[in-house]
Structures are given as structure tokens and as C-alpha cells.
Amino acid sequence: MPTSILEAARRADRFFMGDSPIHSAMKRLASTLGELQIPFAVAGAMAANAHGHARTTADVDILIRREDLDRFKAAYLGRGWVNKFEGAKNFRDAVTGVNIVALIVGQYPGDGQPKPVAFPAPEDVAEVHEDGIPFVSLRALLELKLASGMTTQHRPRDFDDVIQLIRVNRLPETYADSLNPYVAEKFREM
Image (cartoon, rainbow, N blue to C red; front, side, top):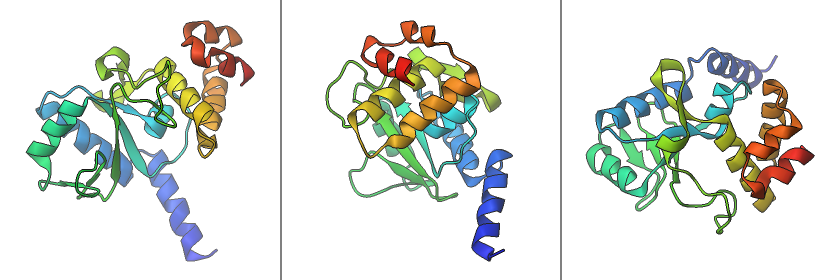
């Protein structure tokens, strides 16, 4: 087997064992934000994993308020965290090299255009899981992924994540009744 395939398999094994650079970055970030008492919730693929859909990712997505992101950056840029580029909302863990994607409360998933689903306040949707890390609730994760997939053609992975989350959590079609009406019909389709 070629070395690159073996290395990829080793990285995937580490990821699914919770021992990857991505997990380390997520834990470091949770600790750092906790020190500053900044509310946040892990979203994206790491939240999908927390809700039973096992898949790899290369970054960590977090829900955070703009002012809290600014406060974090003022305190920690250059101290283990670096901007992706000057003025960027996203940043990188300088220890692990993992990118952090900031999903700003009040902004919109997918194409970024106004729609009935926006990034919610983390304290409204956070559920504390393993290691005390807050993850976006399953309902909020489904709404965000559906809204993103509905408004961007280049993100088919969002729909795949929804399908897999439905399957692994054995969600009935009636679960759509608990979702934002904007995405409920798409959920029923899936």
C-alpha cells in the first residue's frame, strides 16, 4: 500500500479515536474561550460527530458573537492563535495548525444572504457533550445544514450530513414539525 494511503488511514484512525490535531485544537479553543467566559458552541462536522454521524473534517467550526470573537482575538492572537490573514474572522491554532471557522451570530448559512435561518446565539442551542465542550443541538445543526445546502450548490456535503444524521438518529419524518418552516419541507424530502 502506498505511504500516502497508510498515512491517511492513520490520520482517520486517530480522528475516530478522538486523538487528532482537530480534537486537540477544539479542546484548546474550548479551554481558552472558557477562560474568557465567552459563550460558544462547536458546529459543523465536529457537531455532526457529537450527534452520531462519524466523519472526518479538517477544521473546527464555532458559533460565536462578533464582539466575543474580537475579545478573544485581542487577548490571544500571537499567543497560540493566529489570523488566517489580516482582518479575517477565521483563525488558526498555531500549535496544531488546525483552522477555526467562526460562524457569526446573526449571519446566514450557505450563501450568506438573509433567510429565515441565521446562526443562533450559542447559549440558545448549546448542549454540553464530552469533555464539557458545548456542541450545537441536533435540531439547530439540521436547520443550519439544510439552509446552507438549499442556498449553495457547492456544499452537497451539508445534505449528506443531514441524511446521515437522520439515519443514525432514526429521526421520523414528523421531526420536520420541530424545525424552522423554511427548511422543514427539505427535511421531509431527505
